[in-house]
Image (cartoon, rainbow, N blue to C red):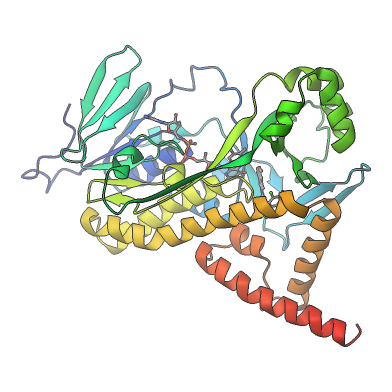
Length: 436
Ligand code: FAD
Ligand code: EGU
């Protein structure tokens, strides 16, 4: 099928945009292009999730922060999504002895919300110029003709043409494969030694087992667990640990022994029997960091979201960065009158440094947390940062604040952070010399 507009007629007819991948970023992108009046075709390899059972092993909740909210707001989706979320105003640090210490995120109104992963791609369906094609798996596409080949659920293959291909097909992007064959395309992929496992903490007497409006964190150097609340009053606990260590725990009793040593307060909350069982339901999942550039191929194709930059989850920014990609692309579409041959290179120029910066920050935080972050260190560092911010609000802004609660470009946040570090070291040293 040839969806693309014939050049001689394209003056009146809007161009066709194929969004490959109907995940979080693909769905949002479809809304952006539909709002501009393009004819949008979304191709998603999975079946329609309204019919399918819940996909196991995938995180169902994610922290949505300022960048993501701004991107949703631009297409009028912020309020509906946010109303289905749970506000999160602080972290709760769990010490080994069971003590819980809250650390607020900062100013009032700076709330991070949790977004339920499930009900997203259909938001694009409110636009009549959008069509969702489920069970369409992209096999390959031609950089010469732009033709895409999809495998349908019935085993048949389908050829499709579009004016623009937007690759939103995640960390293992099939669209990106063609980029790898191009000269001067940079690509790197790094798996970290840690894996993650998700466990559910059920409600107690119909209520949340822990305080709901917090990001619960058990920092234990090499091991870490975090828990985020769900609307059904459960918590999803995510255990992070090196794959070697996962392999050392092979029986139910060893699971309990391990939790007794590192996360004793979580055992009664998850339930010893459930823990013994659920720990082995799914193997630990890998985490990968992917960087590449450029993000575009001539005026035909552009990558966004995890397809362009998968980041490790240690800043809670992967989806937010992907949503901001859509927003930045949209801003450039305004500036350059929807001329793809100008918009695509400009998008690469503007966005690559920022996405690479958040990928680096997330990796840096992973390294920092696994090397020496226990609960005392975590509390101490956050207190120092918040304290300096309170006494010098304009000079020192904590890095997480710039990343999570502003739209300061990621690469500028990093620059500013390096500069602030020097200022902080100076203050700390001169205080010591003065004997304070
Ligand atoms: P995906 O969500 O991977 O979607 C890609 C879609 O493309 C899928 O629907 C897939 O089926 C489809 N697809 C793949 N291949 C094909 C093909 N060949 N043809 C057609 N369709 C295809 N981010 C945050 O902002 N906050 C958080 O709190 C957070 N927590 C996280 C916790 C964990 C443990 C992990 C692993 C990640 C976390 N992230 C978080 C990151 C976030 O999950 C991702 O950044 C986000 O899902 C990326 O969205 P995407 O649409 O680009 O890719
Ligand atoms: C979801 C899944 C606490 C990690 C980074 C903070 C999230 C996260 C933090 C996940 C941490 C880590 C920040 C937010 C958030 C913190 C943040 C949501 C982390 C630096 C590993 N992170 N999330 N930083 O400051 O800026 O609270 O899987 F434990 S929200 Cl790792 Cl703000």
